[in-house]
Image (cartoon, rainbow, N blue to C red):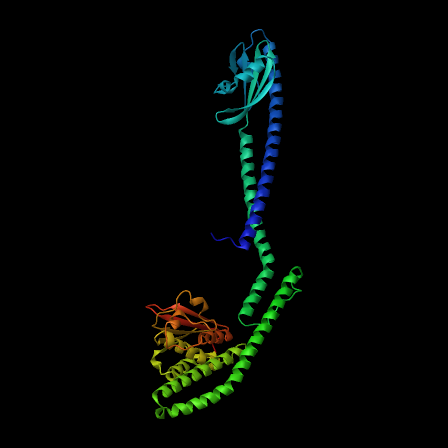
Length: 450
């Protein structure tokens, strides 16, 4: 399972923290508000019950045979309160008794009959109510049932409001986490951009330690690492250039001597002629290797862009290698702003690679999309294995198909030069599987629009 990114985790952490805090505050607020409202409602109900009980007591004591129902009807109980009287085991009510007396708990009745005033919350018709029991003496007990439906509604609205506040706070926390993650990761983004620039060849790119004082150690270490890396690469380039330069003179001498042997080959015996041919081929291969090393050592030089007819250049490269120039297909404007020498060598190396390992190039597609020039070279060989694709453009790397061919004498620098020339233009080189079989080498060169 793939682990979530740092930004997602920061946002989720802020959101979860805000939700936990807001939920805790909402729960505490609800409990305090509920307790306060219920307490105040209970006190109000008890005061009203005592007042109504005093009215009923007065009405019952005014005559020897009082009309209990009439006395109860004198009470102003409104819509929320119901008054009932239990006298000598008989129930009396000011209104129709719809489940009111059944809702009064037996325990509450026994406590009131014993002379103890009591208060208890019950449910009447599915709604919360408060029962106040007040003994009046002489086996008379006054009960007042006060509906808490309005209070239930108020607490429901409060619950919805607090829930919305908690959700809104969590969303605000996520937004704050998103902003904080952007702010915190901004220096790391700059480090990543700098690493990408350096990987693309901008070896002089450095970070400013003063931009983020808290990360000055990171930026200083990063700049030191880049300095060391640049110095090592420069030493490697200088070594390759010096070695290649020193080898050119003796190679030229050997090539001249080999050419003499090649011209007199018909005068030599068979074994000597074969040996002379091998020497000539290896010297040519060695010269090509030295030239490639020299070219690689100059890879940090910027591309000298000029207006170039790439279609005409590609056809010329094909003719130089005795490849039919009819395989070149140009779409759109063929006049690109590129380094003619680099693009020429790039195309030549791709054609040579197709000839050596892919059975020969069968198509060269040139296309200008916006300001990005795209070069595609197709072959009909076995293709490039998935294991070789990530490293096929590295130096001195030869694919599995190369190792299986005895006639391929490449040193593994041709495709490395292709990638280097593409990078000099700010572009990339890649290999894909060609539809129908074979390999397709794709080079993208930005900024080709004149």
